Picture (spheres, rainbow, N blue to C red):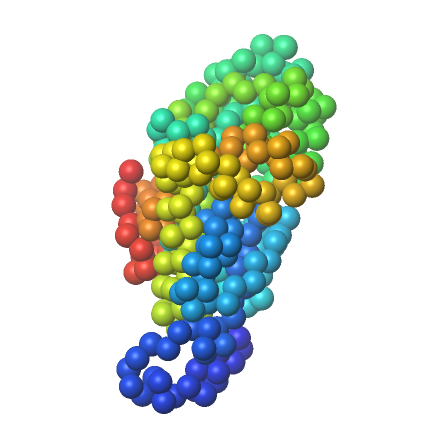
Length: 339
């Protein structure tokens, strides 16, 4: 129904369409809603909004914030949100299997040589000998839900080490953090801007890097409704172009240090409008900087990593064995690669 309304709106500018010229989306009343979490890893969207990259692409963007990835995926499927970034989960793929959503690009990724997601141990478990992932046998590992990215990472780490781990679903990141700090669970893995401050508290210890086990892990992806992917190709391409400009700015500033310390300070000021807003800027800055990981240039998508995630869900019996990559990935928008 959302798509029909948009088509009706586009019909009002039929003269422009008849000439074969692409009118700016904003002139077509192309207001779109972009879902996000208040994480540093969503900075490409923040930058594109703040530096008017969305506006220059003809998109009138509203950023809408969520507390977790799954509600954001549901909002995409219902048409309440147009585009978003999140990790691949069993719930997301299930929505795609129902014809509701499509992955259209890549976002955050693990890259060798860049400080990425950390494997954590509670202080109690650390003092009892859990000082590396090899010691995870028989330990509990926190996840939000079965089939979450946390579940995938923990399982792949355990498989690589040849150990058995029990997974404890706690629904929300805040609940996982509380359980880890109090020793109710033994281990967890999470992005560095959360992991490093936790380790600094003394209640939690870093015992490894996710990149040692998943060196090119496509952590998050860009996704939209199947309707947008199929029927709003210009709008979707415009969104990806603006999003990619934001990602490029982020990478060049925070990873390649192209603007020096002045550039980093300016970028931290921008991101702080959306992340750690309850802290003063100087107190938020270290965590924002700690969150620096590569966001794929041009929203390139590592299909080998995505396929590995799909295969894991199927091996775990969380998804039907006959599902294929094309069920939930539209590879026509961005460059894909295998690494």
